[in-house]
Amino acid sequence: MGLWSGCSLRSERNETPPTHNNRSRVSGGGAQLFPDIFTYNINNYSMMKVLAILFVSVVGCLKKYAEITPLISLKVEQLNSGKKHHFFGYIGQCQTIPWNASGRYVLGLEIDRIDRMPNPDEASTVFVIDTDQNNKIVRLDKTHACNPQQGTMFYWNPLKAETQFFFNDRDVKTGKLFTVLYDLEKKKRVHEYRYDDSPIGNGGVAADGSAFLAIKYGRLARLRLVTGYPEALDWSRDEIAPKNDRKKQYEKHT
Image (cartoon, rainbow, N blue to C red; front, side, top):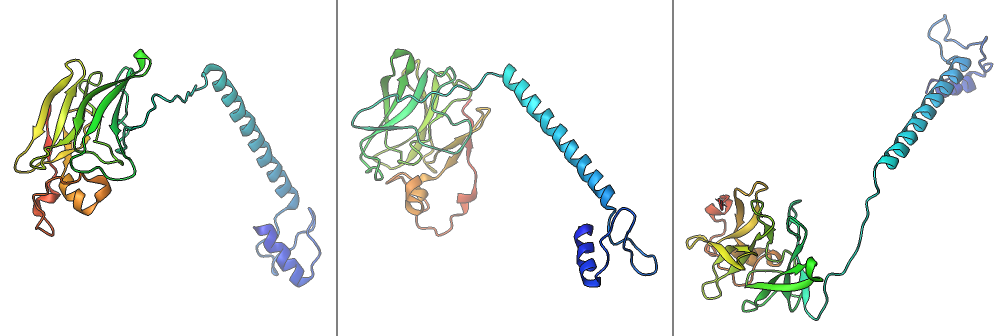
């Protein structure tokens, strides 16, 4: 920056360009306007030398790391096909994954249409893909609580991630939501989390498996259609700002 400032002043005053032995100074022997060009060049050269050494060192480290670390191998494989739509849905939690602990089973939902919200009386099929059996589809259960964006909030139970998983369901007659815990070994629902006074569904399971955070999908069905469940009961429908909407409801399932 000093070099450019000096050039500007030199042009205005028509002074002789500075050299190693000829430096322009402010009148009265004040502060030096121009840096020592020779020193500047040496410093510039030294900096370039340091950067070059750093570059060579980094390249060397990366090369050494590549020699001892195997490259990641990626494989893209279509697991199934057919006339119906198969998907898992997204939830936005790093531990929300389709496959179980061993990676043998891939959890999914089978629906007829994905270009619209499901009708209230339409049931979607819960299934797993068995990768040890040539990607065989094993249909397990049905649910009336799903949407094309989030599915039915699948989540493998952290306490038994090899065989148990959660999903949401809805009572067709009452519209009340509840969460299901399903067991692959027993091939049945081992628990249903039902609350008659406040029917809610799973919105995310704690990483340690101690609880899940529940959401009122009935209200979402009115105010955020793509993430709600059609005809899910909203017990605070007539309230503009329900007081209990802010309450976080947890349920231990241990």
